[in-house]
Length: 276
Ligand SMILES: [Zn+2]
Image 1 (cartoon, helix red, strand yellow):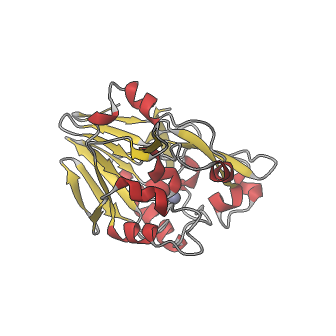
Image 2 (cartoon, protein in one colour):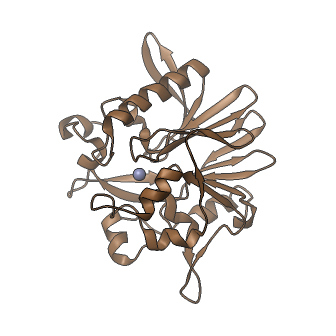
C-alpha cells in the first residue's frame, strides 16, 4: 500500500508453530481458543510477515523471518511450514536481494533474524542480502550472542555470526529518512518497534509486542515474553499513539490481517483492514 510517498508491503516468509500457552500466557485456553484453533499438540500455526518499505531512496526490510538454515531437529521444534518465501515475495515486488540496502531487526529471535541467511552450494552459510546494513538494539545483540538457559532455544549464535556486523542502536533514533526505532523492551530487553513516516501518513511495526490482532488486548501477553509488564505498558502506549496520530499498524505474526488502521467507534477500539 501507499504510505505518503513510500510504498509499504507486508510480505509472507513462512509459517511456524508455537505452543498456545506460550503465545497467550496467563489467558486460559477457554478464552483464546474462541479466536484461534490449536492442533492436537496445543500448537498454533503463526504466519511470519516481514515488512518491506520502499522510500524511493532506500529499500528496507523489517525482520527477515526464520529462513532455511535451521537443521532438521530445530525445524521440527519450530514446526516450520516449508521453504522461505522471502526472496520470491521480494521478486513479486520487483526487487532482487541486492536491492535491499537496510535491514532492521525488531529483535534477534530465530523467527525474525535467521531469514537473511542461506546455505550455498558448497554447504556454507552466507548472507542473502549482500548490500544491506543491518541494525538491532545494542542490548539485543549482546543478549543474542550470550544466551542463557531460558533464551538459548530462541537465539542461534552460530548462525547469527554469519551476518558479520550488525550495527548497534542505543535506545530510540532515526535509521534512515522516514524510518525510526524506539526501544520497547518487554518481549526481550532489547526489542524495538519501528516507525515509518511519509508526509501525513505513518505506520508502526510493533514486532512481538503486538504480534497478532488478538494480542491488542493488553493482558494477552505471551509467556515467552521476558518482561510481561513492560509488554503491557508498551502495548497500551503504542495503541494510544496509533489512535492519536492515525497510524497504521503492521502485524508480524497475524493469521490473516497484515496491515490495519485503528479507530475508536462508540468508545470501542476497532480495526479497518488495509492488507490481508
Ligand atoms: Zn520473538
